[in-house]
Length: 100
Image (cartoon, rainbow, N blue to C red; front, top):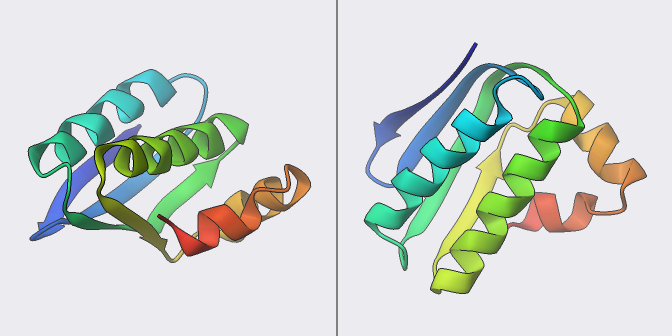
């Protein structure tokens, strides 16, 4: 199960496991939150992300791309080591760490 919840103004918290089974739902939820203030500066706290695979990385990267296309800003906090490792293998770790 995955949850994406408001944790403050333009701040979201990702909790649970993000994998192929729930990536579409999480992706759509994130896009809906970001669309509320497409040009805003968003932060997503990933400290509650208990498990993740390459589908999670794809979701996070697409959220970054969506924010960038809309002229907004997005960065992630407390990315789990598993996500960092997958990003490193995929050579997108710097993009994921820096945000847009």
